[in-house]
Structures are given as C-alpha cells and as structure tokens.
Length: 215
Image 1 (cartoon, helix red, strand yellow):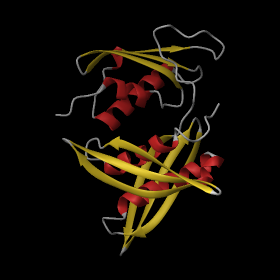
Image 2 (cartoon, rainbow, N blue to C red; image 1 turned 60 degrees about the horizontal axis):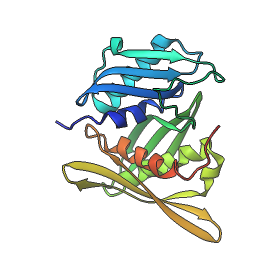
Image 3 (cartoon, rainbow, N blue to C red; image 1 turned 30 degrees about the vertical axis):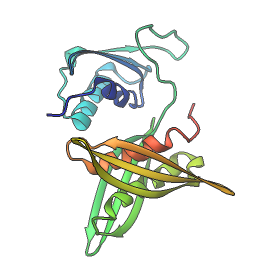
C-alpha cells in the first residue's frame, strides 16, 4: 500500500477555498492532529466535513472529525506561529466527467476559486492516446474562464508514465508571449487509479507557477 505523504495532504487541504493554512501532526504516515486556519463565514463543522471529503476523495483516507481543529480569524488578525499560511488562492478541481458517443468523447472539467466555478470542455476521438490530452485541454479551457491571463496557454502534450512503483501524469503546456513561446511542465502522482484527476492536477502544477497570483 502506498505510504501517505502528510505534506502532500497539507498542500491539498490548503487548496480549499476557505482554508488559509494547515499543519498536520502525524505518527508515521497517519495524521493524529490536523490544525486548520480558516477565514470566518463558513461554519467550522462544514470546514471539518470539507477536510474529511478531500482526504477521502484524494487519498482514500477516512479522518476522525475529532482530530480536526479549526481556528477562524479575521483577515487583519495575526496568524498563529505554528500554522503556515498560504496567501494566494489557486484553482481547485471540483469535478471531471467524460461522455462517449460513437467514436467521439466529450470531457468536462470543473474548476473553482472561492465561490466562482468554471466548466471547461474538450472534444475528440475515443482513442486511448487522446484521452489524457482531452482532460488537459478541458482543464486549460476552464482556467481561461477563471483567469484572463490563461488565454495565452495551450496544451502541448499529456501522458501518464511509470516512474518506479508509481504512475505519474506529466503535462507540457505552451505559454505564448509573442514573439516568444515558452514550454512549461507539471506533474502529479496518480492516486487510486484516478488518471484523469492526476492529469488535471498536473496542468495546475504547471500553470500555478506562471499565472499571476490572485489576491
């Protein structure tokens, strides 16, 4: 069974819209305490449920709600020393679907930032060599709707490769800034055989480092 990386779980939880920081205390690869710093507004119980949902959907990990503590601070309030605050708000993956009709397939990828959602589309053949590129293209299409500067992006390649004992999604994206073109890459480990999710995360891994931060 693949060992859980607690730092990766921290990063994934930090992508929740209302969460600004997470610190996990663990025994080996098992979390024993999860401390969450969040914005006021959403009830703390709902934030705990969101944390449980992300852990289960992304890592197959069932969390006991009793190990999750939530502190909600006003934006101007000082942060606690033992919580790493993540300032920029980044897109998160809300859903991925694909529908096949004859020899064609339609992929939808839903991304969200705070309360804003966008659905990206990509259509192509049902060929196995095309499916990863379609997911990547739909992810970029959703990004363009959320972040205007993403209009300069286009998918160059998307594939899942075997590295050691893990399958890893690797995506290259072209950023056009006339007269120049820059190729950027991103990667993500495939979790629980969810290749589509890994491809979408690889796109975000590539683009989050290039697109302007939201603030």
